[in-house]
Amino acid sequence: MPWTDLWPALPAVAAMLMTGFAEAAPDPRALASDPAAVQQLVQAVSLDVMSEATLGACEDMGVASAEPMRDAWVAWRERHQIAPMRMVVARMQQRSSSIPSFTRLTEPMRQRVLDDPSPEQACAALAHDWQSPGMDVSTLYPQARGVALALVKANLVAPPTPLAIAPEAPRGHVLLPSQIPALAAQRGHWLVISEEEAQRKLGVVYVKGRVAREIDRPMHFFLVQQQGDRHVQQRIHLKFDAEPWVGREVVLRGVVTSLNDNSLDLADAALVANPAGLTPSPLPQAPMLRKEVVLQRVTTLPGRGLAEKDLAAVVIHGESNFNNGTRWEEDVRFLLRDGTVYHRTEMPPDQLNVVASRQLEPQRWGRWRANSKGYEMQAQDDDGKPAGAWQAEKHHAVRPWPKDTRLEGSFTRGTFTGSLVLGGRSSSRTLRFTRDGRFERSYSALSSTGTLAATLNNTVIAGSAHGDGKGSSSTGGGTVGTPFGTAGAVSSRKQDDGASRRGRYQLSGFVLALDYDDGHQERLLSFPVHDDNETVYVGSGSLVLDK
Image (cartoon, rainbow, N blue to C red):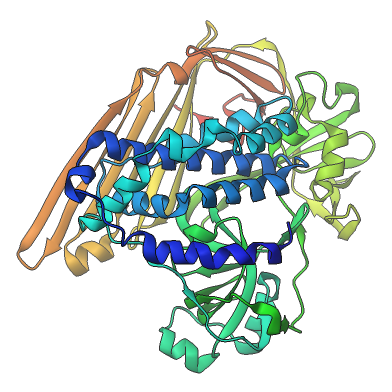
């Protein structure tokens, strides 16, 4: 659907937001305190959250129906006035921990699509379902909208603030996310400034893009620019609640309160209902890049991927990274006998779908050749053309595991992100093997505010989490300085029985196969990094034997 076809509906949505929450419920406090009614509101919004997660997975899988599917979702949300209900629930979540985060819903819905052998059919079916009685939110949850109104009327939740509509017929240039680097080169960079200063610095700007958000940061909205399997990395961050416009392409007026090569912040925004008088900005655009391809699109069944006879070597290089903490980073590549190299290795070689990968992610491929000191490699661009000169690499070849290898001991990897002054997070993960073929995964994490917060305002906030084959738990708490002294609180939670972190293992070739006691399975890239078997690569990084 062309973006201009959506404009007739936008003022109606805005009007609904401005007037809908002024409606009176018969007894707002009674309805707002009715657990069953509030549950209907949460369930209605949950259905939207799960729908959005499924739509995102369908887009990631590159299904042909993704664009009309997005239009169908936007229309479904508008038909049932879901956006204002979701805005109310978001405010409830900010005020009370009794309304849990929806992140627990999103990943299972994504995985259902990513693991579906026929994602095109599954996605098309969902688009059809949005038109069916089975997804009629008004019928399924008849009290949902009423309780949202009641919560606002009873002053238990702040009413959603509608986006202003620009009254004038604008004249000027409209900026795309891809033109942010050129704008920054022309006008310079600045950190967060006030709206008044932004007005003096650059004046009013007009921007255009599709409203999107990150699945794990549902209140963080931004404009994106994409076309087919290409997108730009630059984003226009929206400093207002853009819930009603998610999935739509919009034109906005505002001021730029932050600007750098990769993003700008747009504040004091208004919707441009009639952009006919605007013309495209003459600033040059950054090139559109291929979007990241999800792993499921370039993998196949075990044994049907890269044949052993076609694999020349698996090579690795690692080094420390002290940027914003301390961590060990490794780069693993597959060298093929035809002289090509593959630079993405979350899967074992025998599950790499070479044909699909060369088509969908040519930038992951390149050329390699041996020399007297090791290897040289040449990268490829997004179109599969040579990118740059040949480069000497520090990688060394590793050997596969002998069939049915058995290990004994615990192998650990630790990282620290942040700083002692500003605060940070330390974590470790361990994989313990036994000679009888059993394994157990465990992890621990500790996060805390730094010495700066403790010194300036007597505030210390910390949290910890731990999990192993017996179960998992988390604890959080701290003290906060106030004019009347310090206040503190501690909370803890235990969950699961650890079955998802223990089971039986098998090592052969470049594969670690894990069969968990809860029934799920994993098949990971693995090999000994050195000949002493004291450093083991598993999945996405190496672990070192505890001594």
